[in-house]
Image (tube, rainbow, N blue to C red; front, side):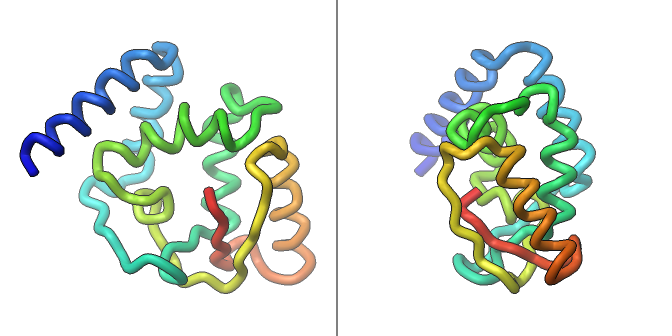
Length: 136
């Protein structure tokens, strides 16, 4: 187990060192901004949702890097580095909620378009504080 953990940490370290220096520092600032120094795992399933507001805050925080990119870029360059240290899901890392809506989407869609869709849904049927779950 110790060898596996060491391997994971080394893999994360190598991955972080391949990120542009400015993105690496923005990820570090994001982790500080989360103010969750000791996040905990939760059961898989409906307790792993994020609010639309959390999603929008993420988008805003990384907008200079996200631009017109899709989830394939965001997952490997932002989400995985944010979650790697604690080996948790994105929802667990930023603060999970009980799901009220599940959203299925194609990772090839521009992330901005995905967020705009969530924003329209939040305004028309729920509030931005309503927990949503997707394969983010």
